Image 1: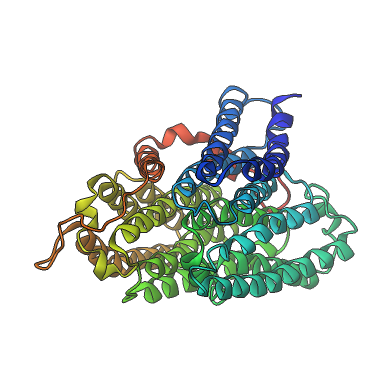
Image 2: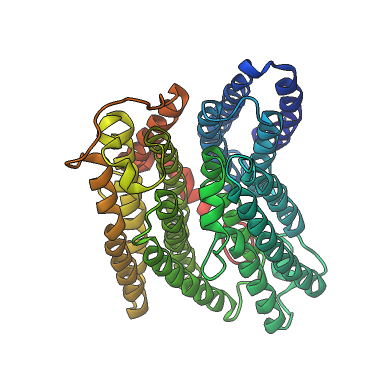
Length: 487
């Protein structure tokens, strides 16, 4: 097998390992089941290393899928740390034998999207990734009854999005008689542009439900808050990036003629502005830290869509690069923030921000890491979040148009708005108040796998901000998502 074939086979391997993990976990006694998480983490780390070697050593190989490899690196990297953190958090007497197989199935589907070559396969892979997550969201339903209602809400809205996207794909098939990404642009060249636009909007709306864009976001806060933190980590990163790649690969199969690219760009820019603004406003004054980070995730998706919208509307490759880079940076920062938040909450005995006062100072390593994630999400220099937002601002400015400058200004204003909840958050967690409890009495110990996962994500967040040239393949991956076919 040549390097691209080896990389494309990895999602199948992960899925097969998911089946094997069910039997392995069933055979282990309850007191040893946490090793299933460790084993899952090392499996994903091994795949991560293989993909990294392919992208470094065989970058010049013909027909290599940079978008598939980039998505695969993100999926396996965050998946590995999420599996390690789960190993220290799951009740060994619970249905752990179902957790890790579903976990791996979700990652396999998200990873395979970038290697798909037709719209229906992309759709199936998105669903393969989503269905296990529906079940995993309800994993803690016995200790948290609201987890079941959150999972049902996600399921119902996810199915609605699924049917909407499938309808758009069906319309394109009727018009072009093929679903191949490489063949559809020429097949649709002579088609009526209105049905093509209608199908494209259906795809954007359908996948937009799973991305949590406003006003299709109502499932997201409860699902993120009630799912196990390891599941939330893969929801904010791997599965969301899989859907993002699916949406824009699907749009890349449309003809690049006429006004279609600009119209779609305008639609995506509208959703981007509404999503980032609404997400930041909803995050203000949330007493529960889970919901602060959840609504912040909605705002961050608006930033990501802004880059892709600029790329489409202005035919600007930098917009795609900025959007993809920030999506990767966001996934790592937000996964780390949720893991840190859960560690603080377990020690404090509550998810209310006010009751976590001083937790960052008490657990200094996790506190510093959490600060790094929050600094990155708010755009502080020396973090990947700052570089991502700088690229987005640059993409708006280099258009040399008033509309592009206005978009850059809206992004800057939203970054300022986000400080309204980020600054109080850091102040509360990092400093003791007059009544601060500095004693560790009746406190839970934070598992070492959780601490190591958080530190790893913090280090990568800083590394990407300091050495962006190390990720040249992100630009190549972005170049494979363009209207008129995958280049």
